[in-house]
Image 1 (spheres, rainbow, N blue to C red):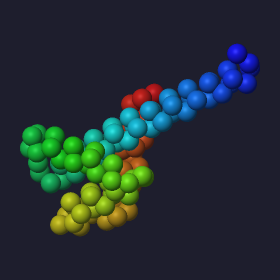
Image 2: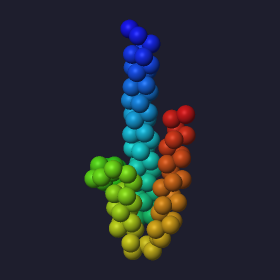
Image 3: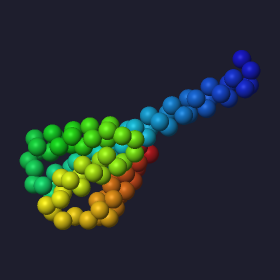
Image 4: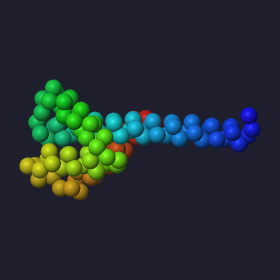
Length: 102
């Protein structure tokens, strides 16, 4: 195998690893977001588990975080939590999720 082919395979493996890690971080962040919103909404543990699953599923609607943001914003409408506060919390929980995989 040539050096070029080895480098190509190495880059492909790194890309696959990075994509898998990003998927795991996003799923973990969504779990944390679900827990945060569940606390605000006063859900019991069963309701929380169910809600976390809906947040995780919402993330599959489109690429990026906008789908999760819209869901959380809609669910928190009656609690008057600002867009900025939601985005700040999502960023904070994303960093927490990243640190879980270090």
